[in-house]
Image 1 (cartoon, helix red, strand yellow):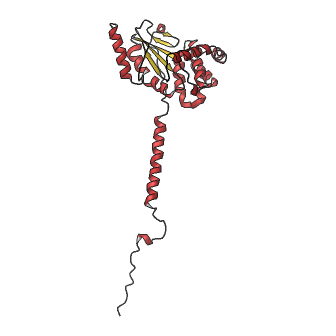
Image 2: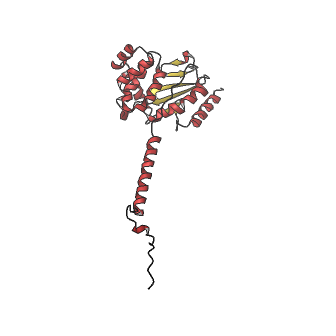
Length: 240
């Protein structure tokens, strides 16, 4: 009788001891979960407030800067920006649209830009505190530098709009911190901020940023092409 071969047969993968291959269903569920996490992370990153970039105002004549207004006081085109310092969309507008307006129109004396306070209730108390801080800075001729500081501070969260942080910003800008602190804690500009809010409500504004060009509300203030086209149209109509 022939001797049976002693050579071992290959062992199939199914019979191999150790780790078991996870079911296909679990792999699909795990992959889907990872995809959801990636999508959520991407959404959070995309919706982070845009950090405002500090602007150099040295090329604008000093006499063209009057508290919260910047540009030729005789300009035939006036832009009114109704904004809220804790508003992420406002920070984005000031990072993307405002610098182009400054370079293309304000420095050339073609338009004047006015900042108006529209503190939203969902951002209180920081919305009103920061607006009053901007007014206190304006008392010392530093509205626009403080304006940029406030928008840049969004990256620090709600703490960026506390009175303590406002005072730190004032010190960073080289303002008289004693005078600034007295102005802010004494709420010397509370009525001015409230008056601006009341005016925004009376105009029927319901979101920030809201942009008016010669008193006409712009549909999409984030669309620089549309904003500049309307400015150009008004300048041409005025023979400029």
